Length: 182
Image 1: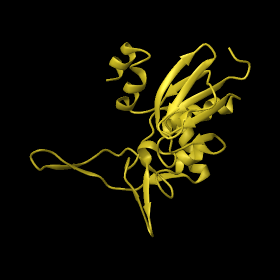
Image 2: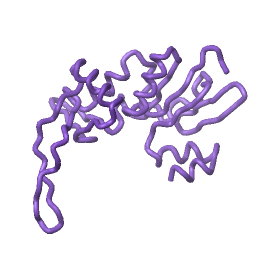
Image 3: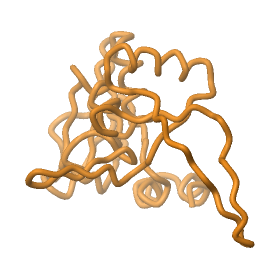
C-alpha cells in the first residue's frame, strides 16, 4: 500500500461526503467526483434568478446515535435546524391521520447546506461524469465524459451513487457486483 494513499469517492451526496470527511479527518488524501454542479446529491437545490427550490429530499430524520451526534455539529454550525411542519397522511379510504411525532430536520438556508458543510476543505471536483474505472498495478484510473482519463491514479475507489449509476461502472470489473447492485 502507498505510504500516502489517495482515494477517489464517486458521488458528492451526504453519504459520499461523510465518507470523504472521515477519511480526510484521519489524514487520508481524498478526491470527490460528482456529475452535478455542486455537492448535495438527493439534497439538491435548484436556483434561478431570484428563486431557489429544494427539489430532492423534503426533510431528514436522525435515529442512529452517530448521526444524531453529527446532526448536533450541523446545528451548531447553522446548517441544519428542526422543521416544525405538521404532516398529515391520507390512506386509500381518505382517512387522515398525523404522521408520528418524530422530529424532522432541514438544511438551512437550503437543503444543500449540510453537504456543503461536509465538503469544506475537500478536493471536490464537480461537473465530471465518471464513465469508466480501470484497475492497474499502479492503482485505479478514472475516465470521465468531460475530460477523458484523469491524470492521477487512485489507491482505491468508493462508489456513493444510486445503484443504477453504479451498475455500468461495476459491470466491466465485476459482473457479480453489478448484478447485486441491480
